[in-house]
Length: 145
View: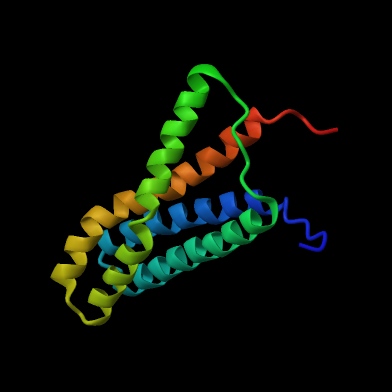
């Protein structure tokens, strides 16, 4: 793709995942404290952060392809297990978040709560494991001088 270098994006993506995890956690605290407006802003921020991650992730992989884990043995098994669970569970985040937003917008808060009871831990897990995967990948690659 014409010499476009997007090798900086994995670190940016890990940052977007970390931000999403922080927004999700803060949003959970806000709603527990009955700070509904703060909760709304934090959840939209988590969704935006995850959305920006997805756009940058797709751009990076379109230009550079996949990065293979270079480690071996038990750490490779750990990495692949985390990666598989991350990818599988990530499939539920966007549709689940859109459904949660829809129910909140319609003020169907009981339905919203039913969705977010399973969505929140999945989304948080996907966000945190995205950061873990970044560091595991980087730690497995040979140093470039």
